[in-house]
Image (tube, rainbow, N blue to C red; front, side, top):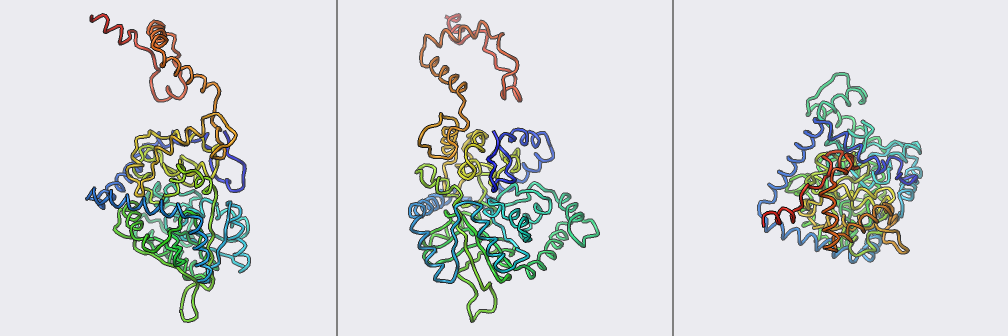
Length: 481
């Protein structure tokens, strides 16, 4: 099935191509080795940060409780956040769709006659495809996170929510910089030199930019504070050097109190990159004051819905919004580890992408994503805020493949429904409910198994054909007396 033809899905690749994209990676031994090595490294770093399993489970339970407490109060916390931020001098904007978010952000840029927007890391800006919208409006949008800068130069999307260029080798990056970065005449694959090349480019752009854009990791309602976690310092540069700072975040990122932040921060950094704490933790509560020497003169916050209210309306699906975007579920997922992020074709890949993308893009475009899972449970076991990802995947499969009904919980419910497949499963259930019918069917199968076709759909693309054994278990037991 094809992706919906909507402006915010310009570069979304429909789920029908997932199998082909995954096959390309699986058949590339170099990419498979690279992903395996990277994921093993991240898993070992996380494990080293949580040597005490009791402490880990206690902290996970606390994190889950904090997220669920704040989600339960989300509507009132959002209003409190808006009131506090407004009082602090921050202008708050609400966007229901990616189109509305882009219109708001580009409107602010046009108001200031902006020519260049320099961006800190923000998956929500990837979600709304802001770079493409800005380019269409004649406004430059430059990524300043090194990984994001690399994939932007390559004309790609991030393949991981924490490490966007994890699919690139240093040789890939060396060739990219040599070909695409102005002024780079000599090829080098020395990592320190590559970092310095990127830094030199970006430092100039921070000073030239009219607008700085950032994401938000947590927004504190009681104080009107935007919290930003980062390691490179580019986030701090984006939020302080340009005269105008625009922050964008999903509506689920709000917490009630500053006291809720430390446990979540500890879980985020240790789960994501295996760090005790990130290099920078920025807290922004307003524009530059009269007595201050630096900082933006104008701060805006864009609060985006984009399907989040749909997830919020259902008690079970609401747990999706507990996510703190650490990426641990991706690092431990046997499917993601083998195929990487680009195979999914969505902004958020891996286990978290499978449960959040259907709310953003509809089940019409993502019906098969929930089936791209072994349901091994690793994602749920490592999630720092205990999102029951396997349980939610089962729910999404039910929503996608059950018959359409009048009051669906999700947009596109029943998109993957097939009357033929449904009839086959009903027949299977009928046979297994009746011992007599089961006996007849297995007897026929053991005698006429040679009639089974050699090609059995997706099963035989990677496996030998299924054929019933020539003797049933009951027959063998009877022979043995």
